[in-house]
Image (cartoon, rainbow, N blue to C red; front, side, top):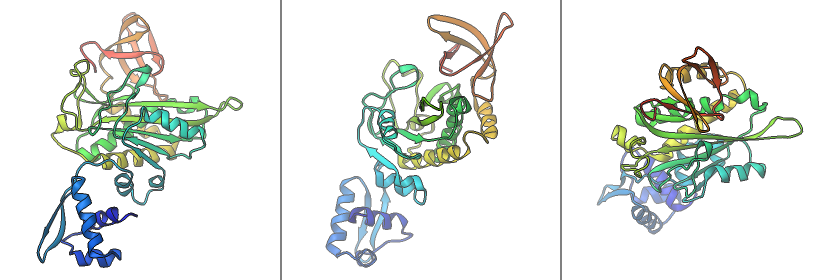
Length: 328
């Protein structure tokens, strides 16, 4: 661990002021090295109070998204050693797929402060500005056939809701099948992509991508009416490193259950799905058809009833579903 990170860790753990002498003794550093580290931390936005005969005290810290910050929030978890954190990438999912194809183990995670070509479901772009969101993709390697993990996106949505609630105190709803919402506005999106071994038809790997709007206060005009952030909705600024750690812990718990053992989480998905019990428009290509969203099947398919009395199970990759009177 570098000097700066070592000093920061001690200041974050301290229950009271730490003198320069205490820091130098605990870390085996010179007083000059401690002062240099403090000065570097202040330059990065950390507020460190200091006074004669009092020592140093960390009073505020910026929302920095670094490997060290995420690893510290994930301390003790094996996935903490499998992190790649970038300032900017075209797409965290693309980079994670590349690592997976090279043999990266389950739990390998790519996190970015900014995406230049973030993608959502059905090829849509995902708004990914710097310093305001969390863009995270994880490699999973479940031993399963594709049809055994058809509900994976739904399960990830439940875990993502758990993580958001843990850091901000309010639980989002789920718009079937891959969006988290506060009220009628989108907070986060999920994109799952898998690779299959041709010879055995088994899943080679899955990449789960999650993008969360954390601190945005404004959005581009085309999504302004349908998007929100944790800050806009709750008034709270959260530490993105803490949210990343909470998401990774939730995904680790989920991956340990695959392909079975997820009935409780599917029940939680149904309970949190704001699409159910509403009139929706089922969009298939250029065709639009109104229906009533009745339930979610164990495989994650949305069960709808049409006005002519027919029923259909809709798989997430087949169609898009919209509320009749808005995004949800």
